[in-house]
Length: 281
Image (cartoon, rainbow, N blue to C red; front, side, top):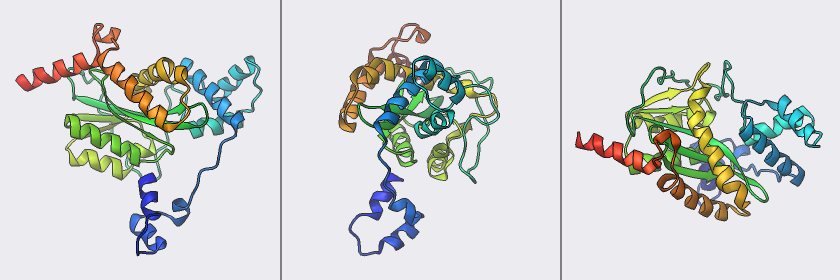
């Protein structure tokens, strides 16, 4: 959406109303400007984010209780509003793990009983809220399940689809196509713009369904590492600083950070070892 909005406001002989029609955008969306968020809400969002990382199965009611125990009296309606803005939801088995946009196709879940044995077999993605000293951004990452390697990532100040597609296209360009790509049912990933890229590369599309919240656990662990090991420690002040900091962190994460689940190896060591074995075979 952000890229299309930028095209609306560039110099061109076509009237802006006509450009909106050609790009399939409502004029109200093209001229929308996000409202500034109060400092009090930003502080609450930071606390909610920390609680969600420690207790990801807590919904708005329990988060309200947790905040009260630490001296913050906030009504549940406000917490729900802030969680929605942050893109947070409690992780527990339920009928619909996220809300796809109306009319978007939902693809079947393909990972049940599937043994993940090599790199580029299954990729996954998700979006998380990243707090800064003032303000916040959204981060999307593409991860290889077998090696836990972060293949690409992007930042955005809106929950649109464009930055998700940009991350996907970079990963495909650099690493080729996986056999299966798994997401939740968020509107960014169920959109035709996103799924069309996967189809064009012959990738099987898998989406988490009822009772499959656990399939997102690898990416959720990544978010915990990113925040506790970098974002919370740095308190980045600008998107430029955040982008530079995450560039350094993901380099460290892939090349130097050892994982117990990978027999104390790094994601790079596992990813390239497996990828090379497959090429040799």
